[in-house]
Length: 54
Length: 555
Image (cartoon, rainbow over all chains, first blue to last red):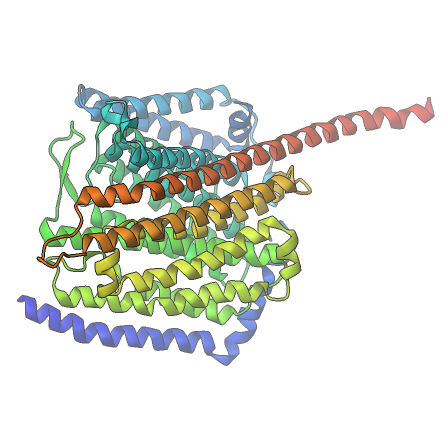
């Protein structure tokens, strides 16, 4: 494997897997049914109950 | 001493035995190092490890036969390591800032080295950087991460020994690092100066730290893992990867501090700056963003403005930062396309960075009255502003043509401190002032006015520092690239040094302001802890008196 092969591989593969991961993240973050989950999560830290749940 | 005894009294029998065997093992390791490295600084560090272990063993033996703790302890979160971590962070802050200001004055008055090798710029500067980044920042991250992890998962830490191992081991690493620099031990890699044996030790500590995180998450009682934990975990995991790869080295012998890196030439430079920039990204950014995403909404009493945006910016930061390191090597032997790659990713980083800063400020939108009245929340607000400013500046400076002016000048120093003082230290002080009353169960800090004083000293110090270095850096950069009509350089290097001097004085004064602020903070925290102790003893005394008083009517 020479330098050009590695460079070629990283330039093409790098482009595609980064775009694929970005799409995955956007889908997860914007998926409508996740809204409830996120809303609960962001409000749950304001809960004043300072004890572990058993 | 009483505090240590109380902690050990809370340990179960198995935890006490575990602690004993760990301390015994490190004592033997220290002894072996002291023997094989006799006459070398490696031996001196062996003696240091041995001494730390013996003190620990002594403390353990004193409390060894205390009764087993009651299972009542499991009904509350385990905050003792967080308390200790906050106190240690403040102690390191004072040390690191003091040495930093000393270095700043050394640049104004070069004779301040007193002709001693240990006091030369090359040795005390890393004491400053390690002291503030790893000593102050690291302890604050460990302390707050334990706090946030438990609250957001609603689960207690899995055991009581491993958090103490992490805290003890991490501080031992920091002490080995800074004492090493003074003796001339360094592998000459920025922010990765400690030698091979300290590096191996840190891996052990770090893996334990990550394991605590995973073990607590497995036992979580919340369905969703709150975003602050993602940031803290990215910080722990990526720092482990960076640390292991960048420090791959072969020691010249097992009795010597000296080692040689596995990398050489431009590969060495690229590995170092892949590490160096991601240390900024995952140590100084991701970890502290984790802190911000918990303490800022909590203190403001409002949920984070957009949870979705926090997830998108999390993955943006993790994906993009990985590739940005090569912007430290513009105009070097590094292939041009790698430089361009680093530059492009650095510019793209502005998007997730501003999404985080914007998310923080929009969370405060509607609570500006609280920001006005509460200096603790104001620390966090200013931190978010400086985070936005310094990430913009960073993206800008990574552009090759801008970098040709800024690189190797004080502009870089100014940029780093806008981030380190304005963002990292401000968010940390905010988080500490918020958590001290929560941890020690007091109504508030000992003095709100002293928090206010600290806030203004910190802001003034940062602004003076950053403006001084911007001026100094741009003048320096311009002087170095000004040519005469004959095609020779218009200024000598010494000319640029003379032009820097007033700015170096201003910088040292700004740093002094920041240091005084931190000292005030230490006093305030100390008095709050004392206040908590006094009220605890009073309550205990009241409880003892109460039955006696109740008996009186029946007499």
